[in-house]
Length: 245
Image (cartoon, rainbow, N blue to C red):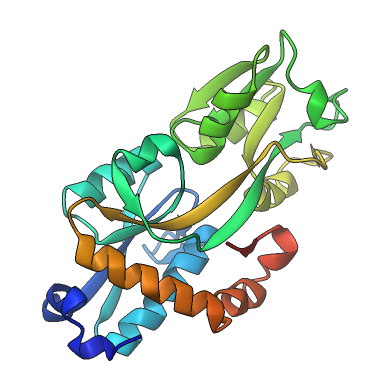
């Protein structure tokens, strides 16, 4: 890549002195003291943007959002510069995407007393699946489920609460996030086979073609150099099903 400090494609960001990455739940967790810790895909996005910010000599800042739709709105309103977001055709109408950064699969969590053993058994009449609305896992279910009922919630914690309280039969989310939720529900199981894959890329607001071009080159360089893999390995995300996109 060219010298980042003098690259005209990001001159506005260098002048502003900050590059802002939008993260949505559950890509981060916020502690009581307002400290924000990236999780999952958020770790990768934050790691890459942190590296870029260091190269540019500017600040890397997280902009917290409750959901993907809210994050996309903030991006398009100018409240952040980019997101780490699952690539979906419906989202391509709203934002532009960089080349793929990471990939991981979606899976199902069932409670201890569930008779469900295989993913193929989930899609049947009477089965209820909780999932946060607007997330890529929700979109994947919309494409694949024909008989079960999909119950959308505002945030992942609400979807988990429904399966914990016995209001639904199955909880759907990326596998790596379900691993943490499973620890909070004794005896629960994550079904071995997933129900689809999420390709995560950086999303940039339409009209910011120069930034899109620069971030695209940065992503390809980060993958080729091994930076993305190093971030995955150091965060133990490889063992949770993550791979380089």
